[in-house]
Image (cartoon, rainbow, N blue to C red):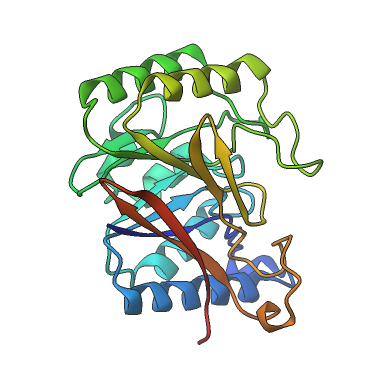
Length: 252
C-alpha cells in the first residue's frame, strides 16, 4: 500500500498580503500534481493545514486540494480550527466520527489507518488526554491482527534540541507510547509539526516526520537542488515488512 504524506502547508488567504501566500499555495499545488502522477492509495495530511485557522484560508486550501485523485485523510494541527475545518471539508466524513475530537479509523485499505487528534484550542503543544487514550486503546483492541499505521500532528518524542517536551503534559506522551507498546499490530507512526525530516525508532516502531510542504518554513534540508522544490513523503506499507519511506522532491 502506498501512502502520500503531506504536512504543515500553512496556507494563507490570497488577500492576506503576506509575502509567502502565493508561494505556499504553489508548493501545495505542485505536490498535489505530483501525487496524482504517482497514484498512491491514499493521502494523509498531518495538520497545520493553514496559518491562523480562518475560513478564507480553508476555502483556498479546499480549492488547492480539490484536484487530488486518491482519498484524503487529514488530522488537525495546532494552527487549525476544528470547527471551521469541519465546516469547509464537509465531504471528509471521517472528521465527524467523534463529536469531540477529529480522530478516526479508516478500514477501507490493505493497512488500517488511524488518525489521531493531538490539538486543543489555544494550545501550541500536543495533547493526548485520558479520553483520547481510551479511544485509541479501544480502536486498536477492535482489530488486533490488522496491520495499522498511526498519524498525528505532534510527535510524541523529542527531536534533538529543536523539539523538546512537545506535549502539554509529559505523562500524556508517555501514555500514548504505552498504548502502542501493548498493540503489536501498529507498524509505525507518522507526524508533522517539526517542519524537518526525521526517521527514527519510537517504542520499537519506525517513526517518520515529514518536512513542511511550504519551502519558506521547512528546516533541516540544506541541499541546493532542493531550494525551490516542495517536498512530501511516500510511505510504502506492507502487511509483512512494515513501513519504508521515501522523501519526494517535486520537480514540476
